[in-house]
Image (cartoon, rainbow, N blue to C red; front, side, top):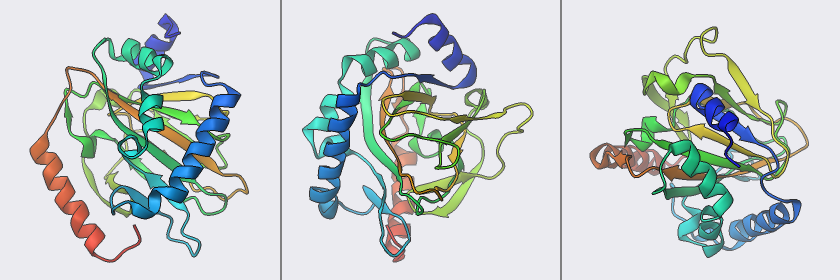
Length: 249
């Protein structure tokens, strides 16, 4: 499944799309499990594990570490199709799941995600880590598709600053030059899977359409990648201060 072409494109661009990896029936089951999680588990979560859009209806914007709260999401992370893909792209047979997360852009309410690199706050060294994103809904330019900059994963972690956006705490001070690293919108159909490197610069626009754009993301790290725990602890302190400020989660 992880063909030479897929591996080559991922290594060159820092992202790749694999079409229709997940069946229609499996997406329907995933959709139901996400709905159940939002109804039953989200009300019990602490700040930092769930964030809401800052609109009157406060729809869910993002949820993190879902696999710690519901066995289904850990089972999904263990799916051999996803693990085989990550294994091939990371060139490591000893990979682990670091996180299962939900990212939603509700119809008419989905907000902008500023340009950033995940490793600006995940602190992996070496950065042999990737995110597999499963499309639950159609993802288009109009409803907030993920937009990645080609080859930006080879630049290392660039300077970031606090974004002021709850759920996406850091933003690039200055994104890479678009002429050297052009943007590509990862337009997906339900069941498609996108993969991006932990250092790939990415962002998304607001969803002003009448269609939701929901995705489930699974982080995989190689056995080579080690977290900088001191840096992570400092980041958690910053988040705690932000949450204590009384802003919407």
